[in-house]
Length: 635
Image (tube, rainbow, N blue to C red; front, side, top):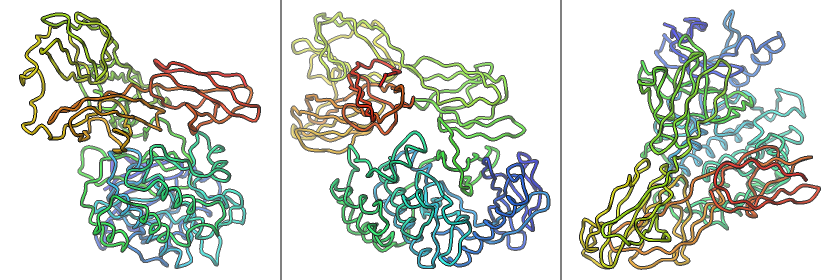
């Protein structure tokens, strides 16, 4: 029986019984169906009729479906989605029936987090390398290798799909010089000439692995033109900080080769590239390394986080309704460029328009209409109708209200922290005040500026007396007078370790991860809420975040068995625009990955120098960021 949420689809497509909608985009959609003869679940790809305006267009899509089925007949690999049938349904046009993969799209895994382990990433990349080399050995060039065309099954195995624009070495679906594929993952020769071979797939696979391992694109940009220019002309970006567990020199060498501009300078196969990359990996056990090197069974031992697809190059993913226990919805990737901001997805049905509601920070409560009924926490997939009113609330932040209007595209709701002035007092008075490991000027009673949107550590000391407490987001001193106790009692501070040489720990509070160096030794990246062991004593810390242009030096005292809290500042959005013309933007001398065309970046609060370099010269502006900033600079 057809799903009531997709009333425009037939109950039967060919011999297949339609069950529900899996995904929908501008050009097509995918439905889950069952083959009644063998009770096998299949995913059926359809083309939207309003997207096929001429007989020639319908013939082109039918040819692509037939090509995908033809290519699938040549391939037999567990890492490639199988095609079962191709045909035409009267009134609905061409359709393609393929293997249904309950799992999660790789582009969503990359962007949503929490991050997969180094081993899991290498296992996914190794499985895809083997699948691509199998296709290349059969003379098949995929031409659209990207995370949006990869599903990670519930067993942890990657599956490469959408060979709709693939070509055989002895045939061509389109004329020479026609660009096919997705711009962000295209090779230089694919962009310049449209003529590709297996080495173009190897380049695209290199871009995919770069993004999988680091969470960043090697050729970032806010416009298609910027991305294409960098692919053809620029080397991959230098990551700061480097990827944990991989030698920076080895990373740079391997990716400069696989992403070489000339095809003949790249690795000969995808597995050769993976072996080269594995040689640069230092944090992988012997058995794990043997597993990846041998492309052994992928058992998916660690759970993959709940995700949604956010690729702007990909067909939209429609979340399954809550009335059924369903596998993760997946879609057949079409060669589209869908510019969707704020990480939300949309489809229309009887219950209105379904939006993926996002907030920054996440975890905010969402209330609807009467504002009494909480419908969930962000991120949240929620159907809305015109006139529906939302209220977004998060402890320590100012609430936001929003009324849904037809045709609107709401951005992610950025919640502003509540900044208050709090009186910190003690008994007896005259205590020194340390807030988030920073000594404040003055003694109690003392007024302090309090950011309610982040956690805080408050420490008061006077002679041998003291008080220490952690405050969660939204918690404030509230005018309380804190009793100072003898500094050795458990009531005043954390229970000390019986072993004076036992390690303490460092805990990060704030909205973004930082790279930590202690006494000159690189300890890796520390995520918010995570802890880092340190020996007792005084340590000089260097904190950096290349992504958010943050650098700071601090001295921290670690007590055996106790945890010290580090707090990083909030983030601000900086928008840069120049006139006339545009240029490349850098922050504090580091490439920001954007053009000065009104594009935005997120930067840690504090002092920064914004520089724009253009053919007309360079302009810079130094500012003390205390909130969002719009810069408009004449060149």
